[in-house]
Image 1 (cartoon, one colour):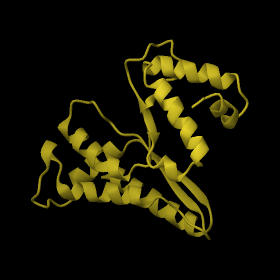
Image 2 (cartoon, one colour):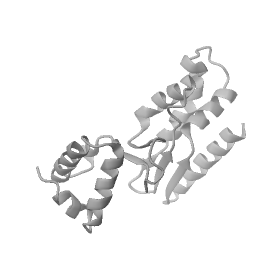
Image 3 (cartoon, rainbow, N blue to C red):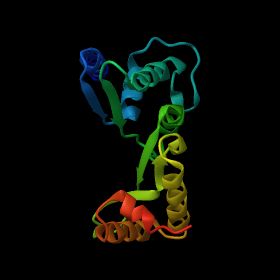
Image 4 (tube, rainbow, N blue to C red):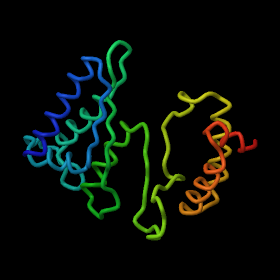
Length: 181
């Protein structure tokens, strides 16, 4: 399908750019649609997973994500992708679950937000895997305090709190310093 061809061309071009020292970002909307496209063009493996997904169809989208990297001497490749979830489709659920292991950061949103909300990011459900490897201990400790505080709020309340508090400070460090142990 054209979807698969375009995705593969973009990925190959991005890899060449990284080899030339460029930092590249690919925005993919969505990993679910890409896996569905592969499901329609891949030769059948004979192993059909729940939702009608052929096992072969999941290999290429996983490889797509696996191409993301940061090199010492060259550039970097970051892939930011959306995923269709809560669609009622078992296929979408299987695709999402198989992709989760490759994800290092997730940003969740929900359709049930009030239309007056300025942003629909669910900061409670969003986060970075293994952020303890990325952040200094003191920053991590304050981040945990912040998460604990936010966990008692609804997603809308949490976002409103963050927007208000961040508006009162100039830097992330300043903001996190307000989070007491």
